[in-house]
Length: 120
Image 1: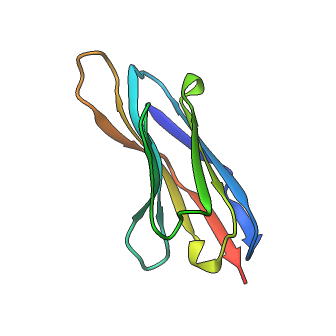
Image 2: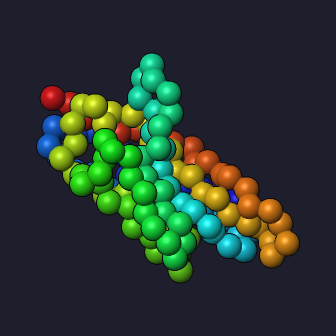
C-alpha cells in the first residue's frame, strides 16, 4: 500500500493550497483518511480526518479554514486550505486506516509528506 501526497508549496499569508493524497495497492477497505502535520521543532499533530461514511473531524486550529473531502471511488483525500498563516507552515502527512483484505485487521499507513510554507 502506498499513499502518494502532492500539492504542497509556498504561498503568502492569506493564500490557499489544495493537497491531495491517493492510496494505492492492495486495498480492501479504507476506514479513515486524513492529514497530520509537523512544524519545525514541534510534535506531529492532527489536521483533520474523515471516517468513511462518517464524520469529519478537524483540529481547532484548522476548523473553518481547512476542508477535507474524499473521493472514495479513487481512494483519494483532498485538503483544501484557505486563509493560510505562517503558523500553518509544516510538512503535511497523509494517513489512512485501512484493511488490505477482508480478514485482515485495520492498519495505519503514512504518506511521504509534502511541505507547505506560508510566508508573511
